[in-house]
Image (cartoon, rainbow, N blue to C red; front, top):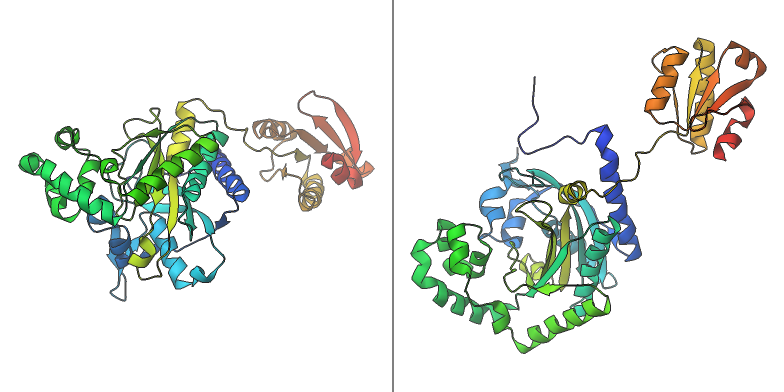
Length: 415
């Protein structure tokens, strides 16, 4: 027997409607905000993630699924969605499109890490990327998309925001952070030691307890924001207040990927274990230029579908009922089943969900199966009904029955 790879999960027919529900909500919210879907390949050239995500990140250093293809090219299954959309933006000349360019995606992504609740090696994301606008109201609007998605699913999560400034702010801050960390650097993990010179801010994202303890009293980036970044951050907060979105400033949020600038944010819940971030994102004004495109401001986020699903289940949020057929067409014998099939064809063309017997069950067994499917009606065609051109329709909710001519079936079940 061949087993599923560790860190992956089958979505079975009995569960898939839950995924469809979450994805449907994401698409509804996207439509409201005039976000257009973009689809990019599942794999990209490895260089894209090295340059875009950042060589000092855990994603690039430890977690990517990278292989050489038959042309000896280094290929990587995408570990996140932003870099691929940014590459598409450049390659397809989307900078000439009317701005802002507002996009969303629903993708599988891949990271080699220890599987845990809500975190798998193959996972799925709903993401939003907006290009061309550097204004703080755009940041607030993207956060509002995330907030509306969470609310539409009946969930609650706390919004935390921060600003990590621009390159100018971070240069001064990195120097101050290095001065603070240097006396205890030998006590920190190997990853933090390697990041000390390359990207000291990434040290603040370390989950090792000893490192977290040392980082506790580190200076915060907010203390070093330049006037422009400070004004931008205050304006984002003002727009969030206008939108009626509650938030808290958390100066320790730096996000795990190198491309972020200025606004960063996370929605966090305590209902999904220690890894409580439901979704996260921020502004990344330098990414397009960094991977070879024109200077273009951008902001976005990604939400893990597995985490949204887990949060809904852990908090007892009710899913809508699984879709059921309107009618089950039961046939007594081969001739009756053939007529049932013919009627099913007409009903389906009219958009009416229905089911027929494919297992040569007895009428009693067909009723039992229709009950398991939660069909609204069972239409029985026996020898007498076939001769009279009618079907005996039973309403499964109140057990009432009536005779319906074959030619009226579509009109009847449309009602």
